[in-house]
Image 1 (cartoon, helix red, strand yellow):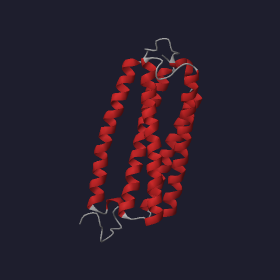
Image 2 (cartoon, helix red, strand yellow):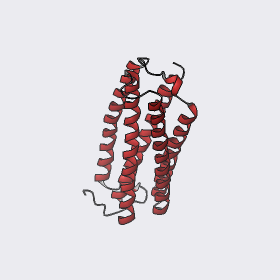
Image 3 (cartoon, one colour):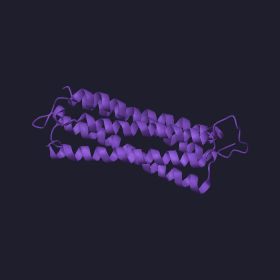
Image 4 (cartoon, one colour):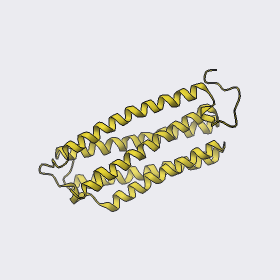
Length: 204
């Protein structure tokens, strides 16, 4: 009972071995519902303000497909490596889990690096939070997503430290699985950003 599993069922994923783990995972799905509402609001504000660039540069003049594709490749590849990490966890392979999570982190930091560089380039071209309603909504949406990615990397690092210290258990497996759900969610949000912000912005 509670969060302590007295028997490990080999036919059940480690993160679902305890009632506490199952309830925590369910609770995190509910949390993701709130995150969907948050990003839905930010997307709605972006669509309302699309085209309202005032005296600022239009997005089609600043958006570069090459840079956006690099960011997309890095983040989507990180989703793949994150999935392999969970697969290794299900195999009870701590080295495999940690190696693939570390690769996920490196790809995530690569994404954040290119996004920050992109933002700096836009500011130099005259597009900032204060430029217009459009650019305010753009930086708010993408900045919120980038902040979530950064927070996700710190969260993943803390879980790797816990696994290194405590080993793989139903408690640490649950945490690793939950952070993987969070990471995949951010990748899905990015797909919407890529298609509705960048691709549509390039043809405005």
